[in-house]
Image (cartoon, rainbow, N blue to C red; front, side, top):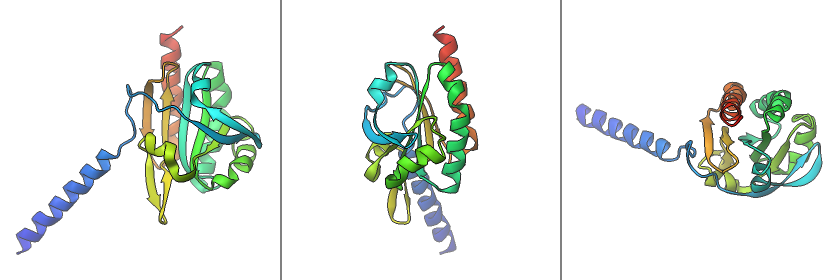
Length: 183
C-alpha cells in the first residue's frame, strides 16, 4: 500500500512538472505574436504597437504581474535606469501587465520614471499568446517574463523568473549580441 502511494505521488509530480513545462513561455526562434495595447508613457495615454516599434529596431518586451507591487516596482526602476542604454543600442523597452490595468498611467510616470511605455493587458490575452500567464488570487495575470524581439519578429531571448533581479541584464546581453551581429 505504501509503495502504491509513493508511485501515485511520483506520477502526480511527473504530471505537474509536464504541465508546468507545457506552459513555458515562447522560446527563442519563435515568431512573436503581434499586438497593440492601450498604455501610457510618462502618465500620458498611448497605443503601443509591437509592429511599429519593431520598425525602429529590437524590442525588449517584459511582462510583469501587477503595477505597484514590490517586485514589479523594483523591476520598473531597474528597466528605467537601463532604458537609455537600450536606446543607444536601438532597442525599445515596453512593459505589459494584466494586473492593476487601471493604474498603468500612474505607474508609467512614478515607477517607470517617464522612461518607457507600459501597456495594459486586460484579461492577460497578450500574455496568453506569449504563453506567460499565471494564476494568483483567482485571477489570470502575466507572469514575470522578458523577451527580446528582433525587427523581423523573431524572439531572440525569453526569460521567466518571478525574481526581477536578472531580467534587465539578460535582456541587455541579448540586445548587445544582436547589435554586435548587425553592425
